[in-house]
Image (cartoon, rainbow, N blue to C red; front, side, top):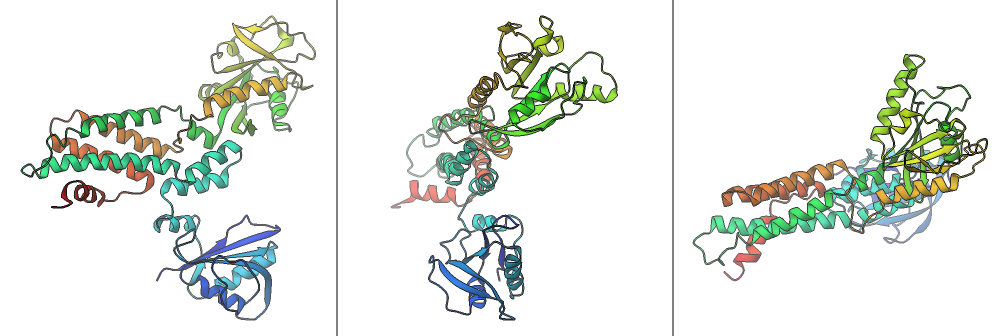
Length: 443
């Protein structure tokens, strides 16, 4: 028998409301035991007194909801107990549920797993549930909601349907050569496969937009010691995230803060000051890490000390490229007077007074939006999506150049399985269904 599971569905700790979810065949019996009353109507919020079934002790006055299978999140009978969010209240209800036969505490992600196993969600939608819970910016929320609503799964299922139909045509040509089939049945699959390979290529050529939106765009602050990088990080973060000192080389490691820029997630990193001769091996390691972070960053903020002009730090100048925002800092004590550095337009700021920071934030937001804003098509959001799509595309390319229809059919089958792994829908009956529908109706 399938065990009935329960768990706190809201964050632990003191709160106004806490929700305990119960899912499985014994969920309604558990609710009846806690209330001692007839079950409320499905989907009807009802205020009831919860009591410990063993001692009769009152636990809470709770709002309860009951959902009957299959019309629930998990596809099973589900009960939700909306409790007052005190620790003692939650602990009492959980203890009472634990004492019920056939009930156990849910494992991490088990409610969503059951929803997937019962056909309520595909894998992309299940992943989107986790993304929505973790969303910290409006752009992350929009992407997760769209994926949870099935945009990504619908796209991949549509591609897989086209592959299944093409494979059915190829297999029909191979297996039934003497039947009265239309001529060139398998040849009709080639333009479909070619068009699909091109669509997948375009889908993959997104500069990792979906993955970056989930994880945050990486921005590295680089520059010479005492250029004001840590002060700039603190000013942008609006808190004292990094230690600031007049002593050169204070920052030895990479310090990260997470920001919301125009609704997009950003990971802003302060790095060690760049200079030719490090004071010791610790600073030398910090410089190595700074250069490594700069090389991997999506955007760099190159900071120059306006008080040192016209001299420019050569190590920082060497990092300037099209993905760099050039900043002249300390303009409160020195006249920047330099509109460009190495041919790159500059932003004059004072991390101490805040002058110029709105313009810098505008520039960084523009960089971020350019890399993360979508074109309207759903974006792949995980490395496993990308890997499976690359496998699918490569199989399609082999199929288009296959010398024999049997080899072509095998590569199309591999391509279909790769797509099916993304959504979790690898149904071996699909091919038989299409063959029957397209070629056997009326025969």
